[in-house]
Length: 119
Image (cartoon, rainbow, N blue to C red; front, side, top):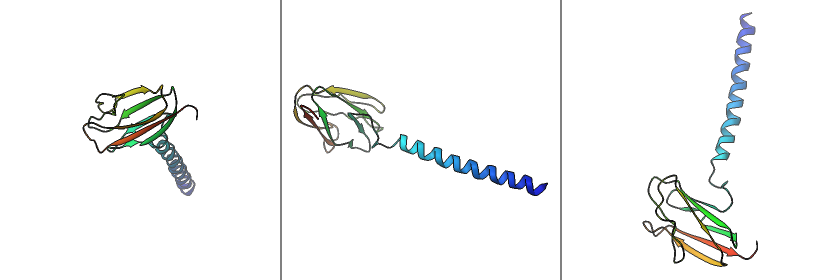
């Protein structure tokens, strides 16, 4: 009787460990910066991720700051304004071309939007 109870407890623990491991992998996948929404640029670790984004004419890009300091994305034709942690800003690109941008407080942070007629 004692051995059966110990065996059931051991099997239960093993099943819980396996299930917990599966859930951890799913959560990790959901929070990976590489798996962002279409036309989304994350500001994280003092970098724009991705730093080069190719979109179609008429598309909107969303920048979301995930750092604890304020950042922006700016160039001659647009400026997101300073974004605090968790804030986002959008810009629609209605002209084709290459749009280099940077962060005003941290000018070493650079990115590029490439706008094409059709992808």
